[in-house]
Image (tube, rainbow, N blue to C red; front, side, top):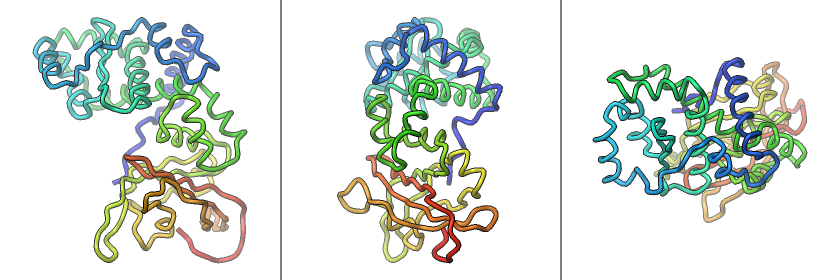
Length: 304
């Protein structure tokens, strides 16, 4: 099933979060420094990363014993994902150091968001000392706000999007920028689609599940569209890409990590057809397919 948008905020909420992130970038003098200096940003926030990973089973058990109320507040995040945790009482963040470095960077900035957004820190401090827990709706909002804080810091406001707009359209652009900013290809490709001025769409697929006959498929995990794509085209409704889908041929199925661009056509909301290019990159965890428009046409060919 396609997952809901994990970073959607109302405009006012987004502006408030980005204002806090911008202030921290200023305090850390982090603008136009590459890769984004995460350690300096944490220092400017007066935050420390725990020297030993909390997510070692023995460490986690000890933490839960001594902070039972806090465990309730963050139980979903700390146990379900086992990736990151913010301890507001000690200005300390715990990060699972077994995940890749680029993921650790995002996690550090996500937990920093909880620290820097005043009402996050205040509520976490209150709930650590009580039996009260955050409601699911509030917890979900806090996670989405922390995600946006992290992406604003990591991609230095609109610095990433300006560089992406100046590059040739294609999946190699976010891959190159990922290395420059110290981000993952996954996060960079989403940011690329989220902010690009041209109509483009990223399919984020789970690894291919091979089966007999027509059973081979890849589940659609997320979709990320540029604003112009969302305005002009209907969002795809499929929940998987199987061998009958026109995009199946784009998926790297052998040892290759990338496929060259393939031409397709899609119809916009007004019924006009557009030539598009699709190309894919395979990570150890996901398959990313970037689709971007080339030109409007009138001929009838394959529609997906």
